[in-house]
Image 1 (cartoon, rainbow, N blue to C red):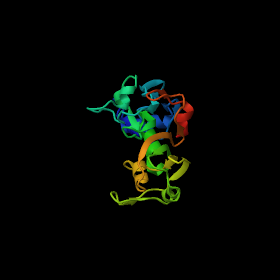
Image 2: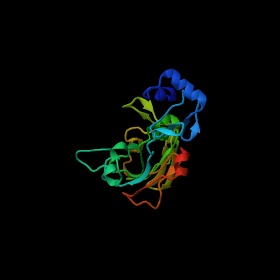
Image 3: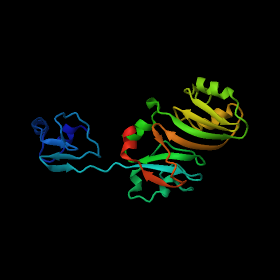
Image 4: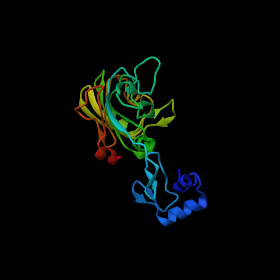
Length: 230
């Protein structure tokens, strides 16, 4: 909500009074005087008037989880345990997942209550790469490096994937970086060459790398430095 509208919604404060308060510099957002009424106010912002708190501001929460196999990237599921079931945190219903992983895919998962922050991390327009370790049933054909970089045509969606970077680490092992998140994209890309993905593990999302100290099912809060990276 815009700051001027936020003020005008207060009891006994008209739009004219809101403009006067802003012009006088008496309104502070997160400890800073703000005179621009078009400034957007979020639920995480602390808003005060002459030292009196108008909105305390909700704490933004950012969690890094090492997702194990056998749980669903969802807030609830009638049949399977979810990643939120792994969290011993209050008010889990307020959290959402930034960039889901398939049921048997492991690795980095980010959980937060800040939708604007998570959209910056996951929207294709941000061009932030997501990096996976991929194990395959058959040896990986080196031609995949060039073809993935060119983009593959997905007939079902009638689209061509964005260029992806493939690094072959061994006969059946590779590191793949995508800049989008199509349905079962990694499996379908290797399936284009009749090679089945047997294990998939996400190592990185944009600037965030899975903490090697986290075992499957464990989690920790992001550090302020990690949050600022996005």
